[in-house]
Image 1 (cartoon, helix red, strand yellow):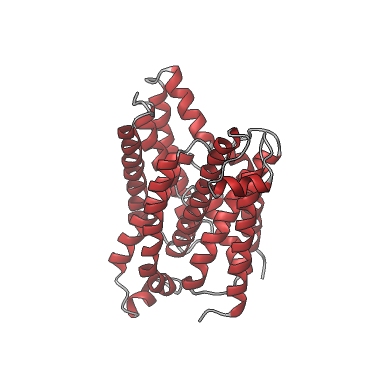
Image 2: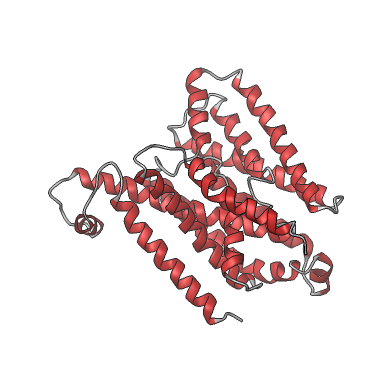
Amino acid sequence: MINKKDIALALVLLVVVLILFVVSLAVGEVHIPLKQIWDILKGNTVENQSFSYIIEARLNRTLMAILGGSSLAVAGLILQVFFRNPLAGPGVLGISSGVTLGVAVVVLGGVSLSTMSSNIAMITSGLLGAFFILSLLMIISKYIINSVTLLIVGLMLSYFTSAFVNALYHWADLEQTRQFVVWGLGSFADVNTEVIKMLSFMIIIIDLSLIFLVKPLNALVLGESYAKSMGINIKVTKILIIIITSLLTALITVYCGPIAFIGIAVPQIVRQFSKSKSHQVTLPLALLTGALFAVLADVLIRLSGSQLPLNTITSLIGAPIIIWTILKMNKVR
């Protein structure tokens, strides 16, 4: 049952995202008046044609932020429910590191990033890396009772994949190394319209498939044994979770770099503002909150007048939230 407070919260989040969307189009090194923005979006001719190119770049960047933030937040929420750990997430569990290794194989392997085939290679390689790490974690989780131990395993897997990445540096030339380092800092910029269209289509399809996970996730909150007693097919659920979270993480990480804290911090924010246990409520709220978090971080970068790495801002916002979550988990009752 969806209560009125959750509906009101969703509407507030939607309005804030829309406001930030407009702000994101207006702010930057070149300020563009709202009237000019509206005219450009409607396809009208404006006096300064350079504004059209600036708005197109900012529009793609903003849409990428919305897609990236919402995808990582949803992936984080699903992983936290499945592993029953509020500190689980694509970055913490090493899934993003798996994608990073996949991308490193392509980029540091000497493949040009200017061709469509290289984009396909990056997505495929990144996805295989995410699948491998998450599948490995699910197997290991069967033999681990303590959820904190699982996080340590995820951290060790991150170090393991980082070792391979560091080895690849020795065979890469200076230009390939520079490209990979810049990618690793994280950014929603420099994504063209064709990529945005492709990602939008794929992520919308993936988000619609979340309908099939609502009931299993609601049951898994109370434990795997309870979920089985409710007739949930755990094996199929695990496969769906692997596919959905790996796809969401890989698609965003390949184009934006390994973005920190969105996947782990946003579910905590959602749980503070909504007390609902139903994922019919929390999944859409995570989607909206993730989009808000990402667009806000990108706007703050441009308002600061600098080209700070995206992960600098997401860490400054997300780290305090995680510290607070850890303190709350260990609070003496």
